[in-house]
Image 1 (tube, helix red, strand yellow):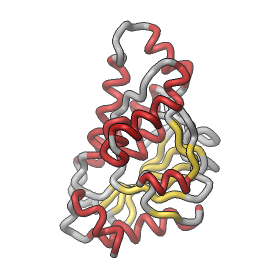
Image 2: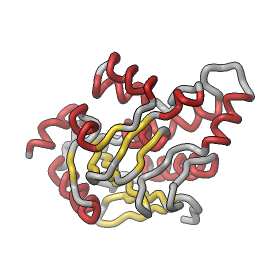
Image 3: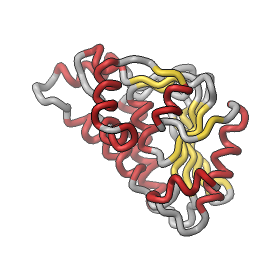
Length: 215
């Protein structure tokens, strides 16, 4: 598959999505086009037992291309521009997959990148991971269903506080809030993701997340 900002392989019945434009792994229009295409490929593969999302370089992703993102908001009076709504569809489809989806995080995980991570069913992170929704500083809101997933994890009040403050939190804080499920060394992120998917077994149910983590 000829992608520029992403790569995708299937190995041992697991799909590996790789953010492949370091150092920032920025998410622009092309990224979302490619990501949507990948999600459709994954949805049609009935042999897959799980999906692992990783990133090249030091950081998971700095999030959306800020200039491009702000231009979309400036072109409309709508609270959420139509292109952003469309971009969010792929993240929602990812979250709705019937197989386990694991995000492997390291370094910066901001904005749209955090929304992608929250769309995964599990998050495994290195200790240097930092998370933030910086959108409020630009007078806009996260628009890729990130707030919805955040509320499910931390509750409405805490989600609102985190979103409006734009603060960057450490991995230890993120773990305390439930945004990170497992810590792992950077070189062990993929192995831990594979092991976690194995624990879920053949009859995977998203509602049993806690029991899988206890195994």
